[in-house]
Length: 108
Image 1 (cartoon, helix red, strand yellow):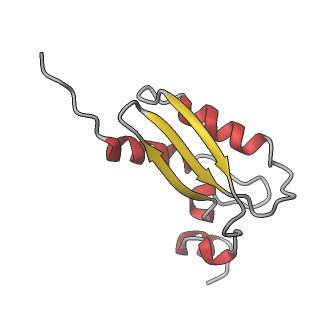
Image 2 (image 1 turned 90 degrees about the vertical axis):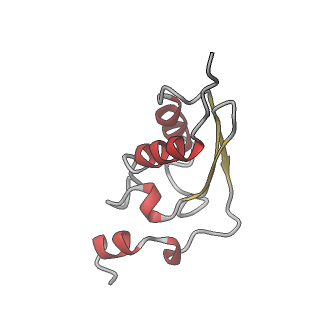
């Protein structure tokens, strides 16, 4: 029997694709391009940990957005479990947005 090697990079790319389908309700840009996702970790057990922030601590989707992310990422076949960690350190700023997001919002 051959042991299947886990391609965490490939899984990471799939996770990013899923993240790019989730939008901040107040801004017409996906959460990945907005810079809300600080890090995505994947281990050998296909457990995923996502470190993210919100545009503000008083964000109206503070409860629902992490839950939506968790559900959508968990729906990927290869993913075993998803842990969400919300942080405001460093606080989100427009500097974290991708060029694409800035262009979309007319900031460039």
